[in-house]
Image (cartoon, rainbow, N blue to C red):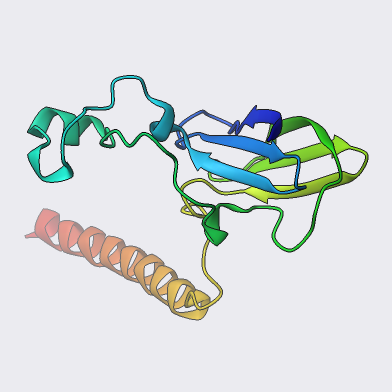
Length: 156
């Protein structure tokens, strides 16, 4: 049974939204908002029109299916009797804070479109710094070379 509903909010509203559902069993679920679009076509996925695909519509299915473990944003935790779900944007566009409360309090972050605006831990920061430094040095040297060439052309 559904005991609380909410929707993710982001800083600029660019990230796709998720519908947040608090269940009586104590789970906090996140469903893609496209699943609740009333314009979903009643066709097999292979027979969708190009316009429907372009709009990102999902073919209609009478049920949302079972609970996928990736949809459970409360992870292994249970939220006893969730009554309200409150969301707040963060400074990152990809992330929304989700606060569910009732008998328990639970705070987590939701990333509907993954963390597209964060660098991964394996990002080569030294390489980026080296490339930026090399470009700055190349800009200064080429500017000096051009000014020297213009001065020589003015004297010729």
